[in-house]
Image (tube, rainbow, N blue to C red):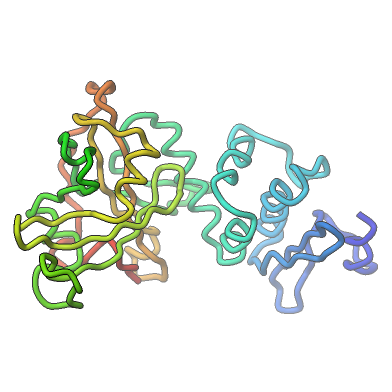
Length: 280
């Protein structure tokens, strides 16, 4: 407390860890382990104060002297942050992606079942839109010793990078090309898979990384995986932002929750490859 007050100088601070900037913005900082950690610059004093509260969860075990009292949403932040390292969490706060990722985490927990086409909001403003692209029911071989997932051709050629012809050649005789694709799950943990085309079976498959996903999610035959595109609403309106792929699981025991939702807004006509590529 004393360190932070000294750093702020004679100015009377309304919020803890918030520092006014000469350009009218607001900076946020926190002290942990006798070190000053800069959290970034924000457009409003409230945003900077919220950044301090979020950082204090990881760095100061919640810090009883928060700027804002716990509510139904922020009480879930410790669980959200448990899936990230301290450095990753701080990076999200600094680059401004923390609020949207936490909003996604809250939305997926509230829905419980399969995700649908949803628009996530923060402070009443639309922030993130997630659109389901397709689902696939897992076969015994998808979760067996072959350690691979077959992607149906009609979906592979529509949403994934081109690995059938062109692109970087693979060193394996049976593989035409391979790329690494990345997805987030409903807990906003990132998963990376090797995606390639097998010439012998003429199949589009996930290989490296898939077995780890199967074990972590305890997948079995008849379970279903669903793929989504999530993007900031500002991105759709021509503003800045990055789209990302999201993968979700529908367990066979939850058969009644399966969604046959028809996606109308896939932007497929734009020729965008939605996974493994950041869309700006």
